[in-house]
Length: 329
Image (cartoon, rainbow, N blue to C red; front, side, top):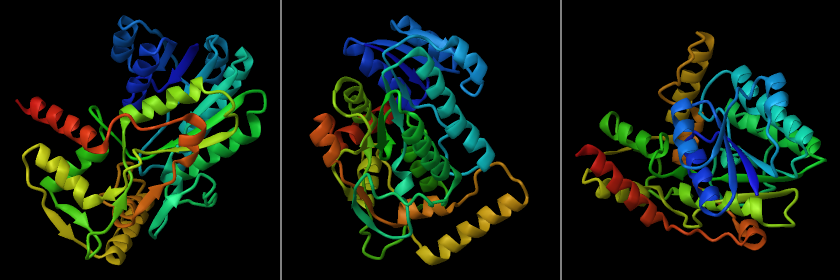
């Protein structure tokens, strides 16, 4: 099949396009990183530089294909609603309209399980357990809005929504790098006295595989899939594994959930009041993800997609650690 991939020059996008190409699909990689697009073109992919927020240009230049994986997004924990809406909702609208015009048959949307985030432990979350009024941050808010738009307007195409949890791997700029940075500064926070916070994270290679299945498997129109490694584990154990792999000692710091959440709230309010664009040192979302357990039910992906993680959590962590040590040489 010929598959358009938006966000192809990003972390997940790079793994996706390689997974598709290696399994016999034609790939049209859409992104804004020119140097990375040149590399992808040399690897055998068709590439396209497009500003997805420019609807007129998109409608004119959108290529013919069988389907699209829309992974491009503004994915961060803090920022003004207007910018998140433009990049996560309006861009999604533009990609859908252009895909409809070209007669694509399936729209695969990469959403986020951050939309499940709340101020309490939550285990085995199923895809329908979404609080559509969740406004913990503007990323969550606009991901919910984009999903709602697609479910309403994607009538002429098949729609598949994917919510991959806690992606990590070589090239990750979020999870592990933030832990390493925290360890060097204030220490890695632990919020529960028994260190029992349980999390789901996912090797990026497994997410790329799941997204390929979303293109290949029939009979999944309107399906929503949680994707994880299906290995819920204590946050403490994950941190100790990664630091052991890079021969460093983690410095943990026990903190009060209530106090830190209040401080994070104040930080966000001050930043908003002063129109500071950078991310606060603490955000409410970050506190929630570190302080409360969250695991996802992936039964839908297992039964309808035939998804089974190909890389174990520890294998993924060890691969990342080996790469980190080589980078330091």
